[in-house]
Image 1 (tube, helix red, strand yellow):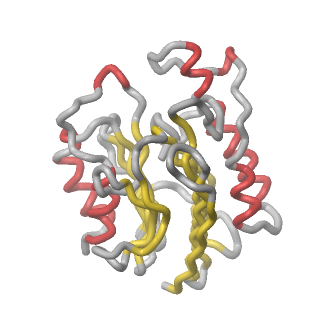
Image 2: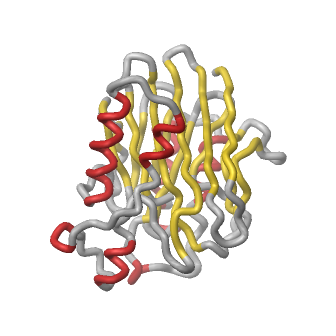
Length: 252
């Protein structure tokens, strides 16, 4: 998962509103969002290569998402799968804070990551590039492949459009449309993350399109004040994937 915007207790009807794009190599095998056969309380897409996930929710209304921290020069082949960070939280009985305390002790086992955890009322954030467990303030936030609310052009653009949209009546289709923007950032706004200009430019889009890598799916999650969870995932026809939309509702 490479781009997430979300609103925490910032809407009169919702505790949490979240819109996210997952960017990945098209050849990496993935299953669309569904309840998992081995963990029936978990709803989300699944990485079939490492059996983890980039984003999922459970029947208790807890949610987790992970993004990579962009540092291509320090990728370790022997690192643990970052997708397990979400899975283990959703099957663990620990609070988000206790879980992150435990993760912080072994954070170096993983390549760079950001982890967002929702416990039903609060959002927590942890990155092994920062080492601090943060309770996310109420309001609108964005996360890509740097630290939370780092003002990359696509993060700022999506936060602004997201904020405007949820200030009036909206639905999941409206949020999905926000995530389909393929426009590239101006050169003078590009961050410097240690990659070449052409790749930096390509990755600056909200919805990334290239020959082998890009946005594979978009996901919308809303949790209302009365505990209604709505989860929508749109997959794109890249690699061996087919274009489809799946939607779920559960009461927590």
